[in-house]
Length: 126
Image (cartoon, rainbow, N blue to C red; front, side, top):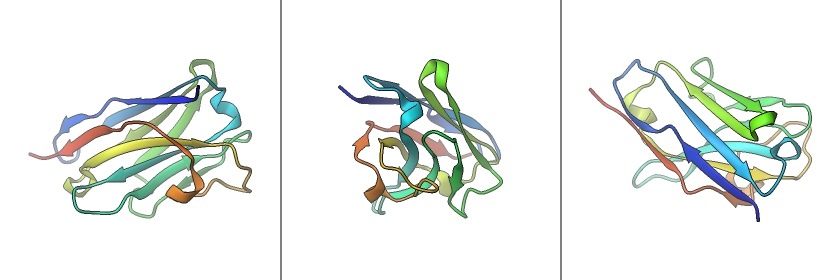
């Protein structure tokens, strides 16, 4: 059974860093697009970043370009989201998601992903 577990969230001051992990079980994540999404209270879920199956191409939302980096460790079946220069507006619950559909480059849209983790809370505050 396909399962995704997020970890690494927490409370951090503005300008700080966190690294989120998305560990997959029940499937080989190398053959899946993995995406990171976030949802703040009262707001819609928005795409943050994704990494493509097979060739590992990456895609980022404009709001996080230059600050966040997505990467994959196939040996650990884990995808990471390194978040630097965090801002209060980055506060949200962060979710990872997986899907095996083939795209030229992964799409950072909730509709492009069929399997989801439970989320991890990130709070950026002084």
